[in-house]
Length: 306
Image (cartoon, rainbow, N blue to C red; front, side, top):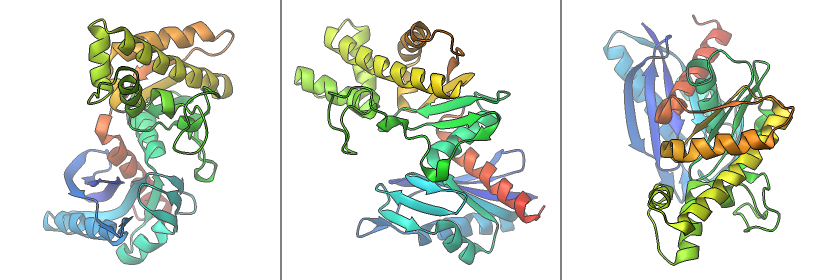
């Protein structure tokens, strides 16, 4: 049986899988990301690919392609990681380096756009031609599909976490003031609650719990986050007209505590615009590997291997 290797590269861990042509996972491994002087070692990806390829061979299967998703500014068409602070890379020709070692068809992509590809293809936005995927965790980014085409812009599309929603707000790590991430990321929610109360919390989920228990400060911090997200989604709706907006990441695990007020807030701001359905992600932590599998099968088809 022909399989592909799907690799989801993160700053702390690498999740990789053997994936069949139906996008079913045959085997998964997870290893800590290796660094030298703070820079992630590219060779580790080749080692992971080799490990899975060898495993496939022991089961009379053949690996025919590889897909890799990476955080940062990623030019998938050129196969180059332009910049990722998380990994310590700048202008790394990742596709070329891995292809030299593996001798297999290979594609790379941005982690959020790759996760979006999975949600658009086999997840929560199947069957629509205009969709948005926005995971909200430590950071915030987005992937867009318009008229059935993914938007990439050479790797620069989708940085919605750095759209300014409060020009007089907190300075963001990127250097701008009032970015969406400063109000609505999971880490920002926890940070802002701590700043207002002097009490450290373990994360946004704890703020949500305190809000449910009647804590007015938690309610204010949460409402600010929902309002900021609604501003960003309203802008996205006006610009790109998504039929479905898929929300993923850790904050989506809050369920209706997030989705109910967010849907109401967005609906109240839209007038003549298309009104998107706002839904939770379907694939969860598997979106990256599933999307990388899709990239790998695209590379195989383009190379005419199968």
